[in-house]
Image (cartoon, rainbow, N blue to C red):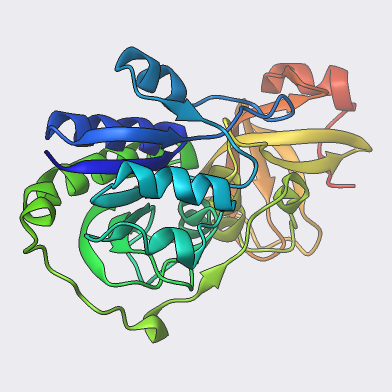
Length: 307
């Protein structure tokens, strides 16, 4: 029986762990994370799945200690797998498994290497992304590709929508290629790293909207950070407003030098100084959802300025 030690978290971790089990892989040990009480936990628990299957589970701050490396060596795994695990694994750790250490990444490598690839792909207006299974090497997300599955990004998809698709793509990719991996005849495709680049993590403050941008760029930001992520935000008449859902609209209006928000036929319309307009479909003020008809009570008479 093929044996693996698995490092996993989040929905991709849940589905890929189940794919291993479906193929009869003996998961001898699972590394995962304690949920951060400061983080909104909207995703499923890998630890809960492991408990259902009686898989030993640990949550160390550092998976690379000499004691843990020896524990893994003693288990004699054939493979190591990392599925959305958040800590770097050392080269000493990666070298333990004779059949390789593999990671599932949420993009079509070599594009969007690094952090939060789904969010970055939407921000850049991509129409496609996916999941890639690749060998782990010293440089993150740079090892040989085993297989990948593409999914579409529709014009109004949010990051949550796309992440659900990528989760299924990850499960499908791993499930499809596991027999070849176990047999030792899976493909290895060298990445051309010049065809992509690394991206860093994002912070809530990166969701600040610049209304001097074109409408399409603002729309991409809004959907890239929409809930369950922290959301895009702006100041309107001195009040902090989160813009949670938008849609591109075509209006017979000239480009405005000063961006503003107004009601047009009961629709809440944002005019962008960089060109184009957006209909605001969902927003909140101080955490409370507000419908367009209520805005005059909250912000005074329209039109409203983004200040």
